[in-house]
Amino acid sequence: MLKPKDYSKGKSNASESITFRMGKIILDELRQEAEHKLKSINTLVNQIVKLYIIWHKPAKQAGFGYFDKALVSDMINLLSDEQIVQLAEQYCNHRLKDIAFMLISENTFTSFIDGIISRLEASGFNYKYNVNGAYITLVIQFDMGRKWSLFFKSYMQKVLEYYKITDGQCEMTDNTVVIKASN
Image (cartoon, rainbow, N blue to C red; front, side, top):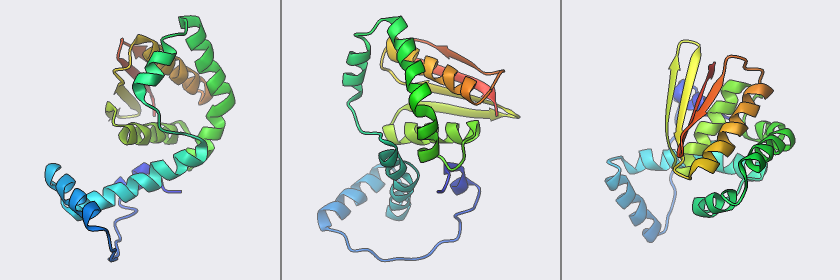
């Protein structure tokens, strides 16, 4: 399985040419989207295929689905803070290893973060990722409220424990989660 970083490290820079036939309506939509994003159709199609290979296909195999974030936010807001922390712990204890094996090529913290970034890209969440020496900072703006931030912060704290990252920390605001850890 290819990792998101494989694309940026030149492992995929060998290319081949291929021809596809597409319906006019789809091609017109692609042209419009490429123009809107100030990209070539070729670049846009490559990005779409890459996202499918590194996220959508493995995510489906891992049991991820698409949900309206307003619905998820509304549901989690029905829980107490204690229930949210318990849910995050249960989720990590029962699913983290399975998800790691299905979504990433190796079960390391760095690969896990690569998977999170792919998920953020596919979901359209705003984020900022910074590597400063051996330390990483990932800031995610969910805009789903304090209780979702609490869930994700608690989840990532369990992830740090799972990967034995002792110098890591997670912080949150009502709409943002910040993860800092050694790489």
